[in-house]
Amino acid sequence: MLNIVLEHVEKRFKGKTIFEDLNFQVDKGQTIGILGANGVGKSVLFKLICGLERPNQGRVLVNNVEVGREEDFPRDVGILINEPAFIPIYSGLKNLMLLAEINNTVDEKTVKSYMKSVGLDPENQTKVQNYSLGMKKKLAICQAIMENQSIILLDEPFNGLDFSSVLEVKKILGELIQEGKTILLTSHHQQDLDAICDELYIIDDYHLKILTDEIRNEYFQ
Image (cartoon, rainbow, N blue to C red; front, side, top):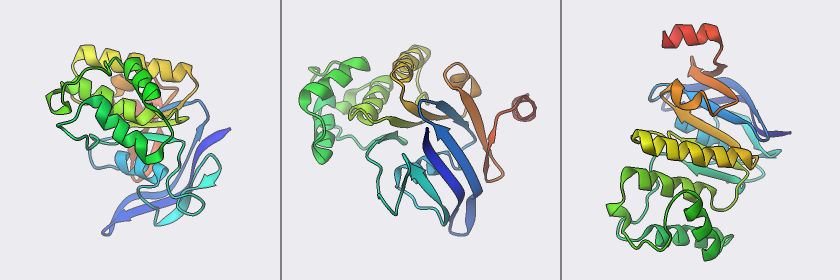
């Protein structure tokens, strides 16, 4: 079953082409890695899937529903793009509860459970402004998964983390994979994604290209 379909998608910003006749499909339960340098369109791809951006041409379908036509923002998509705008003087739990109240789909007990699942103590009253980078990343991942979405989009989840925190985030991802989630990850670094993903793609020349050995040798040797 296909969870995500992009058909003949074109996306431009102020005359600059990001994607051109892009076709891309993700099966339910797949874990897909997206590689590419800054500015090539990794975040834009995720914004197209979750409805934060619209294609200039083509269409995007999530669970067989066309984004922007039948549904503006697919509810079954959890997303981490850059750093969420958490309120720095509030605790992690208070920030997540404010977000939970928007859709009113999860209660405090559920939010606390998800915080524990990513290694955060929901009773910790430390303000987010005093969180370590690793704690902020875990909190960001928690906001992306706490409504039990079946599709998870994580833009640069390892960026800026030390080795220990990378291992902790990979453990969280492994648990999501075991639950059968459909996961898309981006990174600058192939080694971050190799052991996690079913397939790797690279954004090049306005398209997504599956990372074959030939392309690996071209880009990473």
